[in-house]
Image 1 (tube, rainbow, N blue to C red):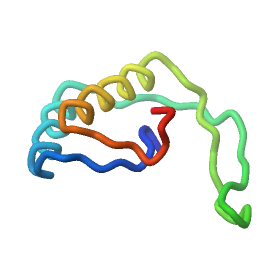
Image 2 (cartoon, rainbow, N blue to C red; image 1 turned 90 degrees about the horizontal axis):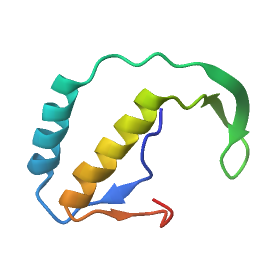
Image 3 (cartoon, helix red, strand yellow; image 1 turned 180 degrees about the vertical axis):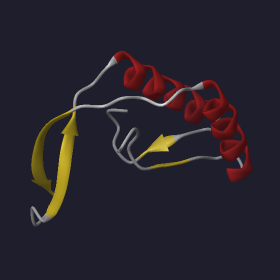
Image 4 (cartoon, rainbow, N blue to C red; image 1 turned 90 degrees about the vertical axis):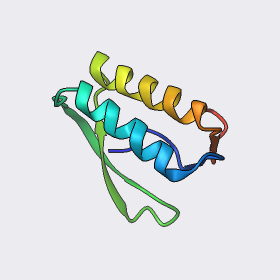
Length: 80
């Protein structure tokens, strides 16, 4: 499951690992539902399942954005 676009950070990777470890202690497993399946990639040869968003996934996404922003994030895709 992709929760963030590819990114780089300016802080040491051990800082990211520590923050993700702390976050993982606070969250519970998240149930997901597949809405549809599709083919992605330049050649449309990467099978993907489109997941229905829910409040838990949105909260996790927000937490990940907060963590990466605190570490000097630069996303490959500016929309993040």
